[in-house]
Length: 320
Image (tube, rainbow, N blue to C red; front, side, top):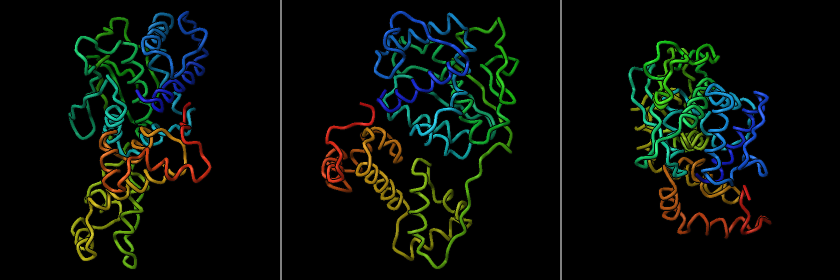
C-alpha cells in the first residue's frame, strides 16, 4: 500500500481507538506506535491484538472515526461519491491504484442492495477476520456520510442487521468469523446523494462548462448521461453542442484529469500515487502513460521542472 493510503488508514485506526478510549498495547509495536511505516506483519499483529483484547465489535467501530479525520485525500475523494455503489466503485479503484493485496468484489442484487466480498488476490492468504471488520466498518460509515443514513448492513447469512440507524448492534455469539468476509448492504432510494445540478449556460461554451464540472470531481465516473443530468439537459443536446464546437467528451475528460494532476504536481508535495488517484486515473501505470502522452514528460519530470521553481525541495514527499 502506498504511503498516502497507509498513513490515512493508520490515522483512522488511531482516531477510532481514541473514540473508544482504547490504548493499543502490543509488544512488537509498543516503542513506535501504529504508524504507516511499520511492516505489514506488525500492522496485522496489531489488529489481531485488538480483536483478541476487545472483540470484533471494536474493529467495526473504528470506521466511525471518519467523522474525526479531516483532509485525508483518499477519504475526500471517496466522500464525493453520489451513491453507495459509486462509493464502493471508487474504493475498488483506490485498491487497484495502491496495489493493495486485498480487494472488494460487488454483486448488485437490486437498485438498493449489494453484496460485498472482501478477498485476497494472492492464493492461500485471505484477509484476517480483523481486517474484514476494519474494512466493512469503514465502508459502512463512508456510505452513511454521503447520505446513506438508511443503510443497513450485516454479514451474509445473518438474520439480524449488525448496522442500522447509524448504530452498531453486537454480533450474535454464534456468528462465524469466517462469514465476515461477505456483507450485505441495503438502503432506501431516498438515501442517495443527488449531484448538485448546474443549469446549462447557453452563453458559455459547453466545453468550458464540462471542463469545470469534471475538474470539480475528477474521481467521478463521468459519462455523457451523468454530465447531462448534472447540467439539467439531455444527452442529445449535450452531444449536439459538443459536435458544434468540435469538442470530444472523452478528450475533455482526459484533459481535465491531466490539468488537475499538473496543478497538484506543481503546487504541492503530495506523492505521485496520491496525485494520480486524486486526479481520477485508474491506476499508476494509466496515470504515467496518459500524463506523458499529454505533456511529453513523466509526472516526476514535470514536478522536477515546475515544483522547484516554487521553492520546494526536489526530493520532498508528503509523508517523509
